[in-house]
Image 1 (cartoon, helix red, strand yellow):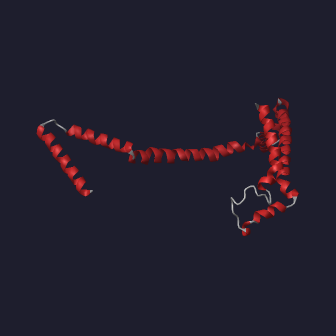
Image 2 (tube, rainbow, N blue to C red; image 1 turned 90 degrees about the vertical axis):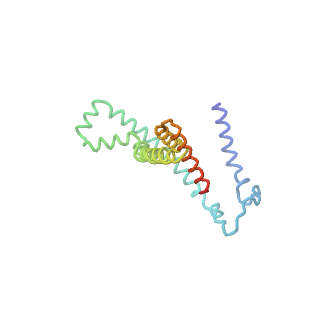
Image 3 (cartoon, rainbow, N blue to C red; image 1 turned 30 degrees about the vertical axis):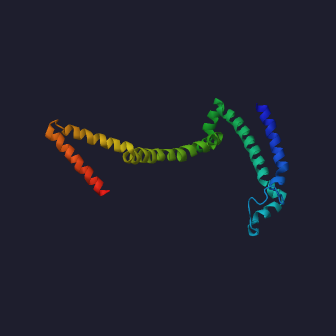
Length: 190
């Protein structure tokens, strides 16, 4: 499956590169007038006529960065294996200050950008989101003011009313009379 997908991806890359002018090139009528542009908004047309070196500069710099990263990674891995031998570690501790050892260690572990980002930014945002949005808003205000809050309130009120209920006839009739009066007041208010 991987082989078939790689063949298809190579074909799609080359066909997209070769046929891009037919779909989105200058003077192409493929889209017709589906997206109308006034003539004053054709500043994007100027980008078609910049030099080819400027167009391909991001590609060349990306390839250079990839090659530089692979080379530095290979070189630093070789240097780290030399550092890991006991003989060289004692020499390094004796002859170099601790700041040098720390900076070399920092570069060996690919600068810990993902750790720094996850710990200081991502973890902080997650903790804030959990404590404020989930605990305070979702579990707090929404549950208190929603149907669950109303059901909890009605349960507490009904349990208090049932505790005050003695079971005698005059007590039952007084609760019935108070309920009818409150219903009548609510209907008149609406």
